[in-house]
Image (cartoon, rainbow, N blue to C red):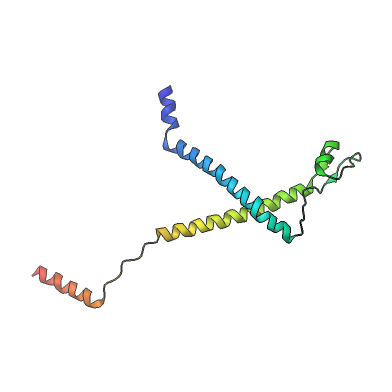
Length: 137
């Protein structure tokens, strides 16, 4: 049974999947930092520091708080601002990933393209034909 488990665990597909998950998690942190530390501050500066995350609609009359976290402690709220913020973050992450993948694909395409063999000049082609004809005689 231990032998079977070892064979399963070291199969190429399982190891490849594990490596993909680990690299994906690390890449996710990179993208999260790119958006949170590089793009969102610029976006905030452009919009004047606009932040939707504390906008909500109280669903109970007993809610008197001004911040979302305090309002949630007091009762049920419809946190539409948090939802809008998450959608904006998702859109920015999606665009960032799009450009990263586009750049990677461009690099791969350049690597995959091999220069086509140059066709010899007409004189050389004729000389090769003459050589081949002389060999056959």
